[in-house]
Image (cartoon, rainbow, N blue to C red; front, side, top):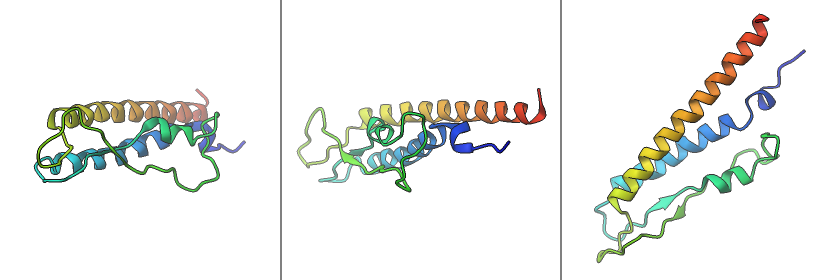
Length: 120
């Protein structure tokens, strides 16, 4: 019996890929915290997951849409920069923890597959 990795791993590879892409966007925001007129961006996990089928398999679209949307600041700045250092640091930290969680789930899936292959 062949193993279908899309069914076996579920949404976890896509969730991990989303976390990597979000890390890039948040790092860009942090790098431009002092750039006048820079508009902060972010990715929506709900938007990406809504593109998934209920059983966790990707839709026929070859790549998930992880396009960044502009963030709305809590407080505007005079120079037009919408990056708020504390908010972006908190998002970056939360995304890092979510990445570790997704990686842990993926490792557990691979461990379970290895045990099934070995017959344990």
